[in-house]
Structure formats: C-alpha cells, structure tokens
Image (cartoon, rainbow, N blue to C red; front, side):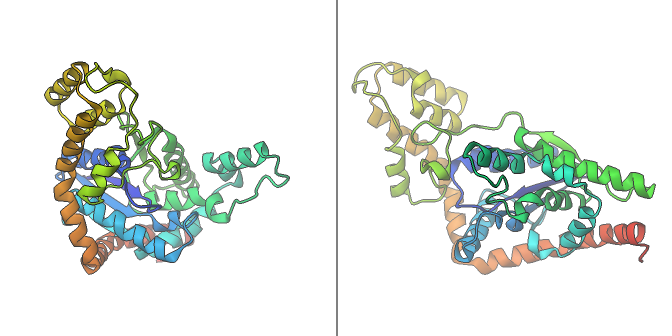
Length: 337
C-alpha cells in the first residue's frame, strides 16, 4: 500500500532564496529520492493559515500565485503529485469543526505559537496576555491537524520547530480512534528535516523579509547582481588574503556550488581574490541556478489562468480522497452514511 506524504506551503510573502534552499529544494529532492511508485505526494497552498497575518486581499492573491508559480518553476510536477489550494477542499473545514469538538482547550493553550505571543505580551508588560491573539492563531493547530488527517497522511516532513503540530494531529487522531474503537483517522508521523540550509541574509543575519535582508528569487538579472553586490564584506584590501570562514560571500557560494567549485573559490579568496570579483563570480553561480526557473516563473505569472487550471485539477484529485475520509468520519462520529 502506498504511503502518503503531505507538505504545506504558507503564502505570507514573495519567495526568496532562503525559501528555495531551506524548503523548496529539500522537498523536491525528497520526492525524487522516495519516488512515485510507493508514495503519494500532496502539496498544498495553506492560504487560510496565512490569513492569520496577511489581511491585504491584493497582496494575499499575489502571494498565492507567487508560491504556486515558484514550486512549479522549480519542477513540481502536478501530474505526478496532488497540488491544490487549501480553500478548494471544503471537506477540510467540516473536519476542522469535528476535530475541534474533540480537542481539549489545554492542548491549544500549550501550542508553541500561542505561548510565544503570551510570553511576548508579558515581556512588554501588557495587562492583557491575549492582546493581538485572534482565534485563527489560537485554533491554528486544529486546522493544521485537519490538513494532515483529511488525506490519511502517513508522513509529514517538518522542521524541528514544527514537530508539535504533527504531535497534536496524531494526538487528535489517537483520541478519536480510541473513543470510537476503530481506526477512523490515520495517525501521522513527523519526518524531521535535519539538514535544512540556514541561509544568511545580505547583512549576515538569518535571511528574513522582516529584516529586509533577503534576495527575492525571481528578480531580474540586473537587480540580482545589484543585491549580490550588497552582501556585507570586511575592509580587507583587493589583493590581500581573505578568510573564507568569515566571508559571507563564501557562505553563499557554498550553497550553490559543488565540492570542486567550492575548493577553487576558497583557494582564490585565500590567494587575494578581490571582493568585487568574488561577488561577480557568486552572481554568475546564483544566476546560472535561477535562470531557467526564472523564465518559467515569469511565463506562469504572466498567464495566471495556467496556475488556476493546475490548482483546480489538483483540487479534484484532493477532494476525491477527502470525500472518502469524510464518509468514514461521518459514519463513525455522527452515525451518518
């Protein structure tokens, strides 16, 4: 029997190089590694999760198309995987309500994101510990559990900071299975992404839109070159030896090169390669990787109907599975056929 692997992507901003190296590339590499013969892959755009923070409808729509086009540009094959928008599967929200009826409030009180907001308010001396907490944030774990459980997911690849979401989903499934004395819901397992690349920003801090230090994935070559030239360097002179282990350009080059190329770049820096030339070589390396996906991305963004069609077709496939799950859930929880 095939296993099901589920991955969600939240459209909260335009994709940058950190998203590609830290999430998109590892996920697509894992698909190739596991293969399609024994595995069903589900990839979805989690726009309802994003709405907890993104409230501008124009931006929201742009982010959805951007993330869809980005995954497709890097080779996600919608004919071999199920690729859909969360909101196109109404069964998801029915299951969310039924799960909420079996979820103790204490489970949500212990959710990391909620606790972090409480701690932030307390640190600021705010008299209301729930200041700024909307119910979307508070009940976020239930919707995420529904994302996972609706498709009988066996494996959910997550970073270490997201393990709790899978644990909560597994706990919900286990509680329901025990109460109704049958396997109503598949109990998922997390797959920890150990070697996730931490991509530095232009200033050396972690790349983040909030720090304004990111390199957007699909800017023009001219803009990309300008951004690469902004990468922070020290005051070492043009012909002086550079220390690769403290050079931000070396950290970037490492992410886009093979072992032999990296060795040559390292030796060149030690040999006195100027920062200007080091950045020029880095630009060429990054641009070579992004050129073909950039062309595909631009083609998709100029023709959003292509994206719509692919997501609609994916939703049909997703709903075929979701309907079977909900028939089982309704029968066992509500006594309805």
